[in-house]
Structures are given as C-alpha cells and as structure tokens.
Image 1 (cartoon, rainbow, N blue to C red):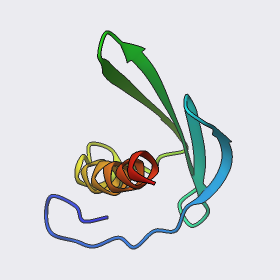
Image 2: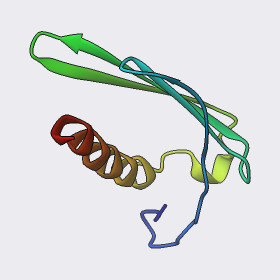
Image 3: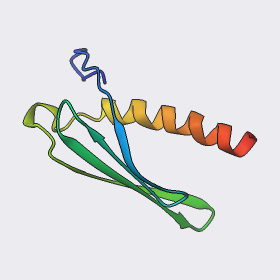
Image 4: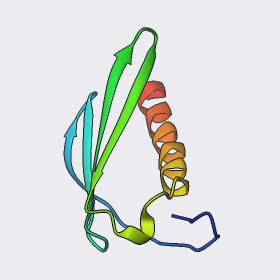
Length: 83
C-alpha cells in the first residue's frame, strides 16, 4: 500500500473466506486488519461494500491502499471472465 504522503506499507493478506461470487474475507496478519468485501448485483452493475475491523489508527483515511486493491481485483476478475 502507498499512503497519500508517499510512504509505502508492504502488506500480505491471507484469505480466510471465499464465497464466489458474493463475499471475500481476508486478514492482514502484520496489522491485524480483517476486511470483508461483499458484492451485490444492482441492475446491470455490481455494488462493492467493504467492512474492515482492527484497522490501526495510522491507516484510517487511507484510500490509496484500496485503490490498488481494486486495480488488482479488476485484473483478477478479468482473468476469470476471459478464462
């Protein structure tokens, strides 16, 4: 993850739940963060909801990390669709 001030925070996630196509849960052991991402069909689009617990105060308000996560998720979903 790269913070808005340019600081880099390498992270490593561990998937603990994967319920295709509606839910992904992962933890980040170093920080203690657990994130639950749910996907819901809304018309012809997909609504993505993210709920995090255990977020250290220094990471609050950091959108850059999830922006990178969404880029990687998009690439993964493209592979699923194409593959």
